[in-house]
Image (cartoon, one colour):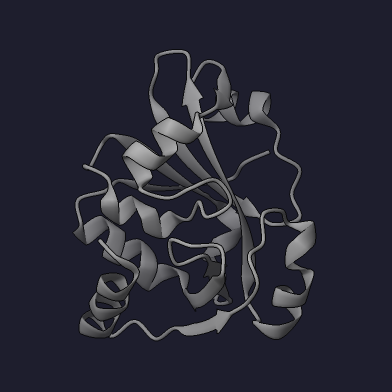
Length: 161
């Protein structure tokens, strides 16, 4: 699914969103200006692989330290390591720096496990990249979750360490 196809799907589903174009960002630190310009719960997106060679996309608040050991224990995943850029591009069809839960739309259901931290259940919009790191989109979490589930994906919401 392309970025434009995702926006068209949002319109069909009645999912309101706000988009902000910006220079490329690769780290949370580089995104401070975006946080100020686009209100919402900004994210840190981790593409991970466990010892059983299962892939995971874990979405945390942007300012949360990633505790891979604690997350693996909570998710009963064994041990996590970061997935390779090649696997990321093959499965999610995005490049490093552009990882986003929206990329799950490009994945065969079950090939990548999607997990959001519990903190995103609030009424605040969630802010994510639209398959590229030169824009950010803010949209309500619950309709996003429902849309991904309609595509056949299991979307877990868990309290993560």
